[in-house]
Amino acid sequence: MTDATVEFSTNEIYFNTSPFSNIADDLSLWFPRILLTFYLILAVGFILNLITAVALMTSPLLSKGKPVHHLFLNMIISDLIACLANQPFLLFQFTEAGERFILNRKMHCVAAVVGFNIGFDSTVTALLLITCERLFAIISPLQHMHRVTRASCRVAIVVNCLLVTAKSSVLFVWNDWKAACISVMPDRYGLFVYNPNLYLCMGLIVLLNIILAFAVGITQRKAGRMNSSQSMSTQSELKIVKIVFLAVGVLLLTWIPHNALANLLLSYRVGRRAFSFELVVAFHMTRGLPLFGTVADPLIYFLRNSQCQEAVLKLFGRTGTLDKGNKQSAYTVELKTAKCIASEDELLTDTPHITLVCNRDV
Image (cartoon, helix red, strand yellow):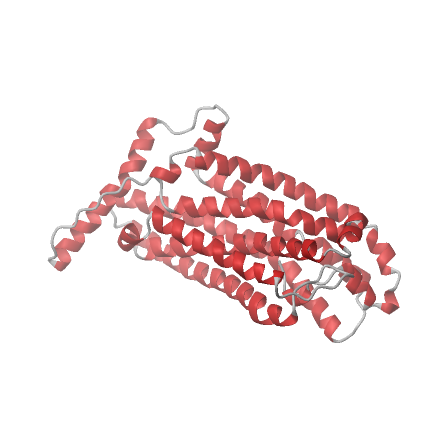
């Protein structure tokens, strides 16, 4: 969740702050509050993501809907992994029993940090995949129809999971474990592997969403000159883009505060200066901020997508909000749009007639 070079525990902070030797006793009073806050977030996030994941997997969205729904399912499952993988790290970090347990258990400590990293990295990269897919859909809708399929999305998800797991699992053989604290990342790993990957992903997410915002503005201006079927298809694409914007906003708002404090603590440690009590408390209290994304992501997807709402309601035995006529029009709108675009391309380029078959849902 933060720079690898700043991944030191409270014990390491206390050791380097001799003028504030009483901070350890004072800060320990905050541990129950910190842990309670984290576990409330994790419990709510786990329930929401589990319901959303089961609803998606039992609905026709994955088999008949847009390929992007596979990427959203990947993000939901990534949040589920984060809710589970963060628990050992929190217990070892903020409970006395956890600290005693981890004291001489190297592999348990490394596994906790690896799970912690995989949980966050998988969510970030899942959002990056969705951003790339939406940008391609807005900039080049016809090529998107041809190139981005459900199979290609599944391949991208598998490759992404393998890369994220491999990057973090390296710590099992390349680590700098200290029995006094949960600190296993070597400085070189943090400087040349973890930090570049983290900031590259965050930078790409910000940059691509800025480009996506401009592309959306251009598309909306063109919407007035489109026929009704093209306009309906464009509006359905833009609805999904709004989900991406909201999810990215939550990620940045929850990640930046702790990352800024972590870098500030790093500057204190490099300068061998003592930490203030308020700074240490803020560092630990903001450490769980990115976990709010595990609650926000399924809520955003549910509230902004009518098909997800219908799938969740059906899971609980309730009737969805969409009638059959609306569902039929949703299934056929992109086929009509694709044929219109193909016909326009045929007239402009004198190429043979293009036949497109598409049954993707909105």
